[in-house]
Length: 190
Image 1 (cartoon, one colour):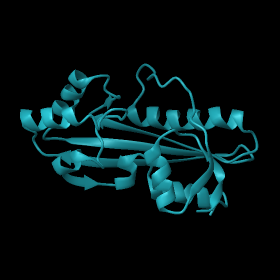
Image 2: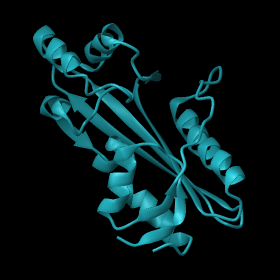
Image 3: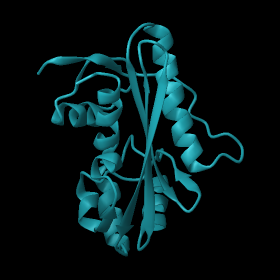
Image 4: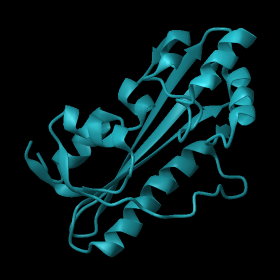
């Protein structure tokens, strides 16, 4: 696959695979090391947009004159961001929280082009989960597939618990492809 003229500011193998799925393989992968703490009174949509922008800006400083693509994705219930669970106990609480209700998966994609211009796109997808029994919760938590992600992995066993999705499946996985392709095409990256 031809490498395209951009750097992906992410260590996520899922984001890389999604890009490759639509023929957009970056010439370099350079994860951004930033503080991902929420600011006081920050809304989830503002948070995810700020994270994507800060990731792109950090990598742009390391690689001036390059096109930098960054993304951030979080699962939200109400106004609460479900951060990555540290252990099985935290993930069990997450599963109980999403059981029988709708959660939102917010993704923001930021492109800083070689001239320093910034463009941002946002995706909000709704995931409606069936009511989960305690056994289903225990079984899912025991898989460990949730490790390293916010909330759950839609592309794994959790998919069997999802009643309905409204929005971008790829955005739920971690990179909304429609928005991403439009950003890159707008910058002349095809």
